[in-house]
Image (cartoon, rainbow, N blue to C red; front, side, top):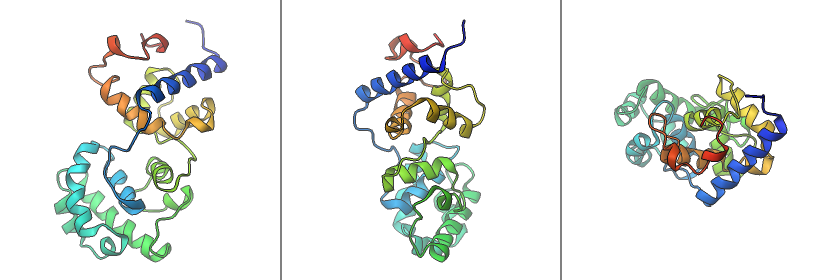
Amino acid sequence: MPRESKASKRERAIEVCRRMDELYPAPTPALKFSGPFQCVIAVALSAQTTDANVNKVTPELFMRWGTPETMAQADAEEVEKVIWSIGFHRNKANNCVACARMIMSDFNGEVPQTMEDLQKLPGVGRKTANIVMNECFGKVEGIAVDTHVFRITHKLKLSSKKEASQVEQDLLSILPRELWKNVNSQWIRFGREFCIARRPRCDECPLYDICPSN
């Protein structure tokens, strides 16, 4: 198969986004949270587990420590007991408390609104920072590449890179900036409904005709 030109790949990627808009015209986050701090915590907790699992533990977590002020005073072992059912619960509990304490000490109790400052928070990487910027502050500076976005990007052969940060850069280079905002939330839905990791529904896929993996 001849190598696809960047112009052709860009055109195909734009068509993917157009169809995603038809499928999911008003995408919303699967994670449940209220406000920037809870968003930071929920997204950080979702690493290497499912959003559904996170949504099972956050009601109690946020009832007890739903603000930076309360979480900063929490005992990490008590937080761990609440989130024990998700992966890496000890490390995540420590990060929750450390994150809240840094917000209180370094950012006057407010979640920072820049990519650089967000990534200073314990447990916060670029993916989390992108989601917080997008969902809470209306600032779109990148695309959050989680497991669904990573898998679908490779399936569509829009990138062959091995690292999420590299996949993000490939997507940013071929998609117009105005299309970045909904990629994460729409592609997560698509990954759960059609491009399922173990049993993709290719015969029903609305992208079948433009997916080079078929």
